[in-house]
Image 1 (cartoon, rainbow, N blue to C red):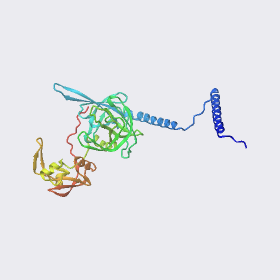
Image 2: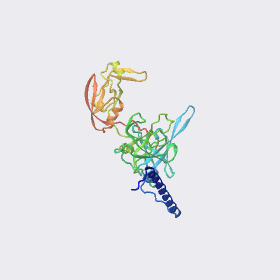
Image 3: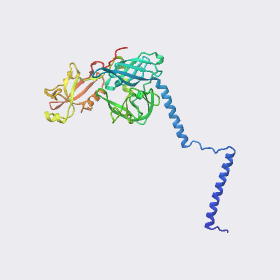
Image 4: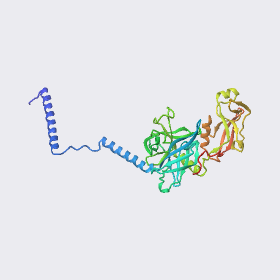
Amino acid sequence: MYQVSYKKLILISLLSAVFAAGIVMVIDSIQYSHGQTRQRPQNTVTDFHLKDVEGEELNNEAVYNAVSPGVVHISSTSYVQGFFEVYAQQGTGSGSIIDEDGHILTNYHVVQGARELDVALADKTHYKATVIGTDPSNDMAIIQIKAPKERLHLVKLGVSADLKVGQKVLAIGNPFGLDRTLTKGIISGLGRPLRAPDGRLIESVIQTDAAINPGNSGGPLLNARGEMIGINSAIANPQGEGGGFIGIGFAVPVDKAKELIPDLIALGHARKPWVGVSTIPMNQNIADRFNFSTDKGLMVTGIARNSPAQRAGLRVGDIKVSDGWTEFVLGGDIIVKIDETVIDNLDDFNSALNKRKIGDTVNMEVIRNGRRTNVSLKLDEQPDRGNPKTLENQ
């Protein structure tokens, strides 16, 4: 039998490889010379991503085209007293048309203190607006324009109860006065707290990384179906008011808006459950100085006449103190629990009431003269202390 040495085997392998490569090159050159090109494999990873991007872009375009005509540009004018004269101060914001009567949903802080409001529609027509209702505690307001129905494109209100972190969102608004700008992002977090213009805490706020800047306030945060799921309201800004967006924005959930809109339109304010007490938060210094049995909870310092608190028998104390500016009466009942909610501060107190409706009965646990006692209390409607809207009807 003929035997081939190891070195000859290696040489034959190399020559075969070179020969095969040469054949491939010749075939390629022949196909190229005849105007033929080798077909690219189908369904590659690159193709998949291109199709995915195309679908994403089409959705963005569709949502923008459908919704942006219903997003308005709000310009506000307030007047400020200077040292020598009164001068006008301008502000801008966004809003969403929600019905054929010309009602527009926006933020309270967009219209706060305004003496004049101008609303620009997508077709560049302008209308004077009237403030219909406000709720500073949820940073929400309803304004109205008198425009022909054919000019009013409505923004559909969606649902915010079933949102998920990671869900795509789109924001449309007027940042820095630029009309109807679209930005895209995701829901970055849920259940965030946000401080309202009146100091109360707004609960269950949506966090997003969709770019929101001054002028976006009051505009819609949308899902991929073009439904409003939130009202863009604020950004986290460690640089203060002069800084820009850093990737953390907040929107008030649309479910809260849907709950408030009927009252804002019909009454001019939002109805809220009411106890009728003024309080101060307890702390270690107060407890130690006056020998109180706890440093937690809210101490009752005042009770409104004909209020649920008065009818339930809550008590104020008789220890008069002053911080140099304000006088307090200490020694009253200390509210430590409402139903199952432990009360450590005013935010806890307001949160417990927000879970209830007018007419509900709550069980309030208080510390009175060092002893715990339970008080049953039926919630009333909070009296309207004057609607904070400032515009005259136009």
